[in-house]
Image (cartoon, rainbow, N blue to C red; front, side, top):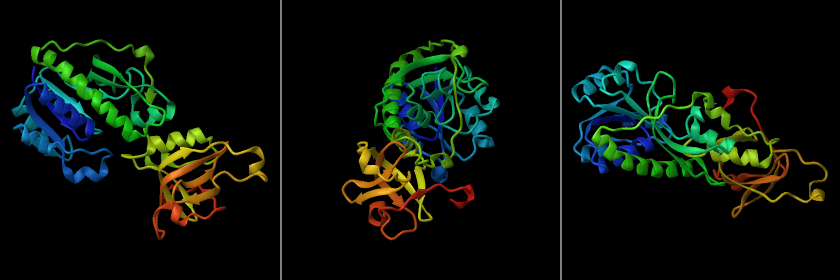
Length: 317
């Protein structure tokens, strides 16, 4: 079998690189145009990799553009790999490939079908995996081609988990390459009775509730972090984005008397960051940026006793 690949993010790049290294015949590559980079988390251009490998390449903004269908009709693949693309690929495009489409999802399917899988994995303490599967009308529900669990470490941020998943993806594709070339790609039906579904997340879901336990806040900071928009709160009317954090040792019972409001800044210094009260203790904000303030690093402007507040109106931020 030969393949074509459509993609836009780091997993697309790693998959294409592995297919090339594995000697799989690639009829063409379609990459989301560089002009769309700012709108796509974890964007990775495919143009240079495809051109260096001597592969036909087409940039696109919308996968429904007539040029996409024309390109694939000319460079007809046996399998169309749709890797790391948030746009819905119409059936008419997938059906150009003689044996259908292949998708990738970073969970142990059928667990964790749906949106924002990396963030939900960290938030829920769930399993991560490389799952390659045949595309069907239902999201992430097709027969499994290959699957391997990816370790999730206790202090992983999204960027850490993405990087480790891409490394496993590379290994899986390299091992699969001989089967692709031989035309013997496996397929194992998913057990749909075991399926779980992750819902869509938006930037607003990164808003911190300081009345949550320290562990919950720490998970949110790690899940919403780079390459995603980041966890955030508001300090004296300014949006503060928290990129890195570290749970603090629980304070002694008599150290918090009288009761201190959750979200209160307890300490600030250049070495450790900013210490903030939570529902059950405190958390160090080790990398945080206060928008619109002189000296953007939070520890430069934080005032002990000031309180982080949520916004009630989503339009305000």
